[in-house]
Length: 339
Image 1 (cartoon, rainbow, N blue to C red):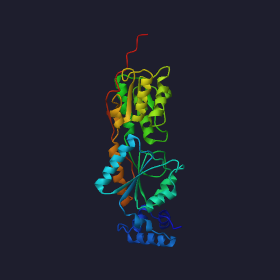
Image 2: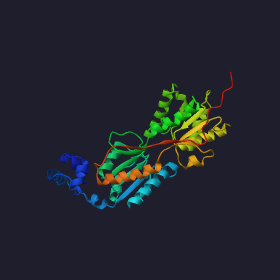
Image 3: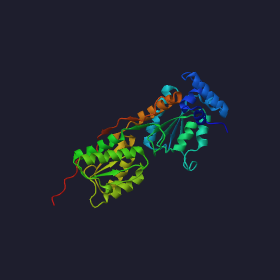
Image 4: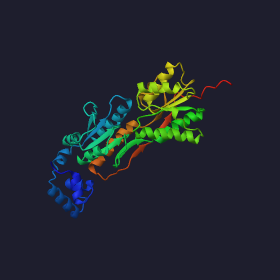
């Protein structure tokens, strides 16, 4: 087995990006450093044949699903950016039955061998070990809406989820609601955590104590959200409004309200998050937080290609701005009868 790029970098006492530059013939490295890296590569038996095959200007974008309007919106932006930049874009989806333990080292090596030098993952859980395999394969990585936490520095693309969560909650507070339910997303989703923090921040500033009974759910999907919304609406003191942290969850809430004979927004106000097509095509046009999903796809592809050319280009996360769009699912709470 030939040595990895990481091993060469450690042997030479340089960063992986510097070792990569030297082994790819980049001129912006001092002669002394070049000599040290090349000597280490030779002594370790490092072979750079994958690098030679990989200069094909291609990006792979990996989804955990290709059905939701969220994923399709991100894909729309990614394809637009690839076409504009005249790059090849390969689209794949994780099939859980075939990859029960996540992505393997062999998978990353096969991606590199196919001539792909940039990878964009969309809401795909990645461990530190998988990030290491990606780096060892010499693949530039950009993550859209990270899932899980790692100790490695990565470039991520997301929206201002905290600000969006706060704006949605503040809108309901401004209408007069004081008992506001929250439909949460996956526990390991960074955007979901940020939206929840925005919700709790707005409540705290309004002098409203956090009530754990009002926070339910753990997935961005319609059917499970119907059940979660029923749980909220069956409380002895049910909420007069629900902030669902995705449009899919908001649609589930609308269905639960209908099944319970509630009229939206007279009996229950609902706010979503995403502003996908389902928000505009809902039975009642949905008040929601717009996040720029198409732009996120564009930026992800652009940043991945830039990193493929220069691993030191940047390492910080990017957050694109959200804003609230008020439609027809929110209104002041119904006046309570005296006594």
